[in-house]
Image 1 (cartoon, helix red, strand yellow):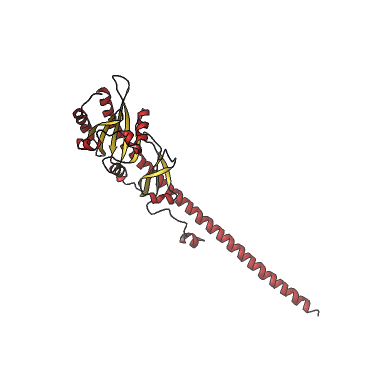
Image 2 (cartoon, helix red, strand yellow):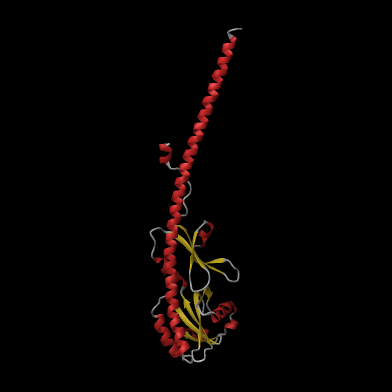
Amino acid sequence: MQQAVPSALDKVARRSARVGFIYNVVISVMVFMFAVVSVEFWLYQQAHDQEVKDVRNALLAYRSRIELKVTQNVDLSHGLTTYISLNPDLTQDQFSRFASQLKAKSPHILNFGAARNWVISHVYPENLKSSLVGTRYHDVPEQLAHVRAAYASSKPVISGPVDLLQGGTALIARQSIINQNTGLPWGVLSTVLDMDSLFSASFAEGEAYPVRVVLQEKSTAEGRFTPIYGDASILAQSPESVAVSLPSGHWRLLGTPQDGWKSLHPHPMVWGVA
């Protein structure tokens, strides 16, 4: 009986040693896994932050070109509104001669249309006369709100995409015209811009970091942003966003990396070092 006591104590000691060993192994593995996962997540966050930075830089470059091209074309049409305001009784021939000079300066202008007292009275090119001249905007409810906004504003009003009376869709910049002889409203000038041409030219010069983009405008009626141009599928991929400053409205440009955001993945080097 005296020899059994040490034997039982030895068993307890050996069992405790095994439990302690297993405990130490488990703790070591947990510490190891925590360290590796922490490094992996840190590397992923660093890579993701760089992705976000690259996407934003590309979006800012695209935004600058969009703003520049829209402003350049609106400035051209401003020359025509000034000409009309100084010559309120101009003929169609006078309108066409001046408008043709402006249109020749931009590949993105499709046509001009001037509406005197809410009725389209002058157009260029003149082959649109039969389908446009004489049209009353009060008979075109889908465009009336934008025309009214232009009448009430001293700044250009941009809207699009707009279903054109002559067919097709486009971006339209409208500006109010004041008769300089009387100081009273003369009407509104509509400058119809080729939306695909205008925006594709803005994105033609690819950035060092390729991205997929979509341009959105905030709808006044619905109060939400709707896609105007680009790849709307990226809206479900947590895109980065930058505001776009155009003469009117609320616009934004969104983008993601060309091949999508990188996911969290193991780095063999980290596991090898660990």
